[in-house]
Length: 398
Ligand code: C6P
Image (cartoon, rainbow, N blue to C red; front, side, top):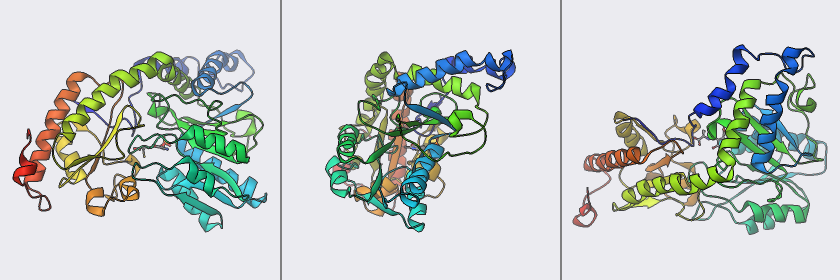
């Protein structure tokens, strides 16, 4: 059996999404900007896809959703355009973010620091989130933008977006949220939550890779990301990848309708909880960030005495895919950054393992994976130089 438990890294394209995309490779391949029937022929499905995107995130018709290559691009764009528009060409100086954002935010902010931007990295509490109050306290008259993720990719912890949105609105500060890990898992509604800009990536919700979006609230202007043609209202020039847009729109529709969210929060959550509870019965294991306010598919667990990478190796041998954290940092063998930010020492921060499920996982897979994980813990603790068995911690179902 093969079990994929790394859905925060990427997801399988839903076969229904793939079917929707197929005609746009060899049959409906016209350039949407061409005036002939081949070009015009792709418009209805593009419009349908865009409507699904607007509906999926609660945008209104006057708002903009610009199709990007992914969330990385959307995150870079909003931060760098803020720098150009509000700091270089305006009278603002500061960007507020958190220390546990995805590297597409933190690395971009560090670059902006080298350009003289004052970046405030808010510290997280022991649950791995920041409070709305800390945002309120950090805002000054110099603040150009607040950028806080909707849900964390490592822990699944959900940030107080509604409260932060209200604070930013009341104080007249622009608010961006990276919703890459939230869409399809919890309700994302930009209008209701007072979000001005929102980033997302289709491959996190069973759409294709290489396509994402930046939501821009009505009336807000950004320096274009790519100059050239008139595509995307001139904000991001370049021929639109129609197949990807169609796929992303349909994936959004399938992932964000009421029933889909309910399924995620019942079935997927029950599988995640089953897996998690079995692991947490073992002594010296810890759920990072705690159980409250999390996306229903994610679990970051520290297993004392078990190096995350060693665990991954054992699981891989058993055809199980998980991760020690963010996929884009998985090659540098660094300690888990969120665990470090929460205050775990380096040794413990190397013991984190992230399981992230999806609606395509089954009960049988979870039963199989649980058994293999328990066996791996026993084996790895048995050869660990840093973990000594005591009668107390040995007394378990291992
Ligand atoms: N996180 C993870 O394993 P792209 O690669 O552009 O589609 O998505 C980037 C991105 C942005 N924000 C958040 C919150 C994310 O989780 C990610 C992708 C993956 O956690 C791959 S590094």
